[in-house]
Length: 199
Image 1 (cartoon, rainbow, N blue to C red):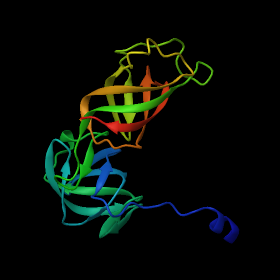
Image 2 (cartoon, rainbow, N blue to C red; image 1 turned 135 degrees about the horizontal axis):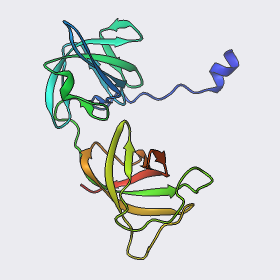
Image 3 (cartoon, rainbow, N blue to C red; image 1 turned 90 degrees about the horizontal axis):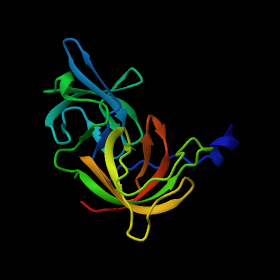
């Protein structure tokens, strides 16, 4: 087992950036409040700190739990449940984000390199053109958007790689290097990497 431990590098935890956690699930604990769960993407969070449900409201962390253990804090890489005061269950859903107030910007437009899966890979059966409107799976968010192909590209065939501009109907936190998946009809039709955030 020592050989395995030596061979597999420990994952890098991004602790030097502000707290950010995509929400994976939400539930209520009667008499205590609302709990949001997810994997802390970056930073740390402590009991007593204020957080923001991006674009909606602020709340205070009154508890941090991981695998049924109560903790004082959570950090990047941890799968945690955050007990939040000042938040109703109906105000939050999967795909939203919890962050340090004012620390994260949300964007709608970005440029990315995308590979379109072939029919044999479980992807597209036909070509698509500019204004194609799939769902985009970004972290835990599932957002509709449209594809704007470069002027010199008339259509994209399954199996193609293309750099294009994408516009989402709702803003989400984005950064260069972030991976995403376009989906159509409940199946993944491609794989992409954000190369540039536009606005």
